[in-house]
Amino acid sequence: MNSLNQIPVIIDCDPGIDDTMMLMLAFARPELDVRLVTTEAGNLTIDKTTYNALSFLTYINKHVEVARGLPQPLFRKQEVAEDIHGEGGLGNVKWADPAFEASKRPAIQAMYDTLMHSTEPITIVATGPLTNIAALLIAHPEVKPNIKQISWMGGSAVGGNMSTTAEFNAYVDPHAAELVMRAGVPIIMSGLDVTHKAYITRDEMVHLRTLGTPFAEKVADMMQFYTFTQKQTPFYAPGFEEQIRIHDVSAVACLVAPELYRGDDYFVEVELEGRLTQGATIVDYTKQSGKEPNVHVLHSVDRAAFIKLFFEAVTTIGKTL
Image (cartoon, rainbow, N blue to C red; front, side):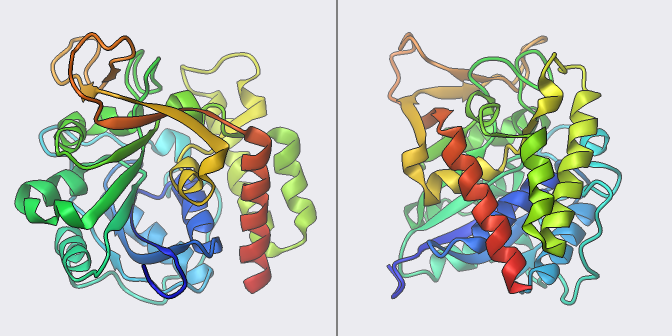
């Protein structure tokens, strides 16, 4: 472990509103040593997610290497979520013109080099489809001992948001998700079961503006946009507009404040062929498969403490700018 006793991490993301809030938390917390950020094609095209990562990190003055990932899923046509995140992916918010460029190393090479040159195992925080990570494990299985764990926001044990059964990140590239599940690397799954409980209310969103910084105003603006677009989804239900799901934040929050979360170990696999269930993460709750657990599945969170953590991050970053 490094001298500050930090957790070394690689962040693989597809910003996206909630990915941006995840990056905020990651860079606000002293527990994490972010060594690399890689981008996925998920919420948006790879050009847009890479730009958004560079833009946000420029705004918060964190010039960490950003490496561009693969431009599309392994075997499927790309699907994006501009209807939720906006055409540019950040609602109506503009952060900053990037002050630095994406790495000359592609994401797979950058992840490989970072993992193999580390003197300690590294945690990968993944908040998009798992395309880059699957490609890394296929091309370089020798990195596995250097991966402490993968903390993934994705999947769902009960119900989806892209289809009746599938969550977006798993649905977009199910083959990648299945490859990662079978890789033998420890995985924490922050699926919809827990992220639907890790929400910010409309009143809490309004309270963000009382923090008194331009950064907090921008965060509130993104949350307000998210409120409107989530309400337009076919999965809207009464009360939904009062609960703004900031899904990806849990993939970092469970590392820096694990006491806030509860989960159990299960065998999980991903459906690749089902007509109605493609992309579903099948969690063996009843132990019918006879297979050893491969994923720690989170199912509950202390929401009050989660929101406190979120507000602390907004305050911390806001004071540094």
